[in-house]
Length: 122
Ligand SMILES: [Zn+2]
Image (cartoon, protein in one colour):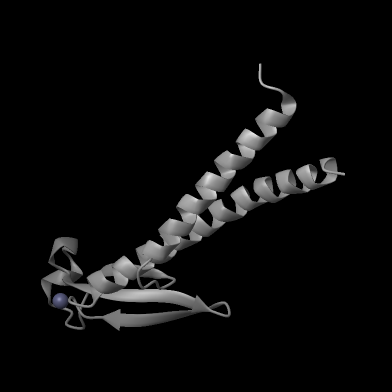
């Protein structure tokens, strides 16, 4: 059985190690954009067109990037060539947010442990 003190310091090194790993992940982050890329199939303005009765014959795909600014949704139309770039950037943003949330949790543990150690050092 390890002593309480040894257990604490090994927990600290685990969160410190995970924190360093997350820092390295941050360095790998590429361009990022908040929001979502949507792929839509649309009906056209011609009432006799097949798209109005057969969902498989709708036009498109049309791509749109949507995000919020101060609670308002902004829609940006994207060309088929632009869509994968925006999609990749929105994925980077989700990954970045997940990494930051993980770093915050690890920081909570690590800082609390450092504080306990500082108190015990007296
Ligand atoms: Zn149509």
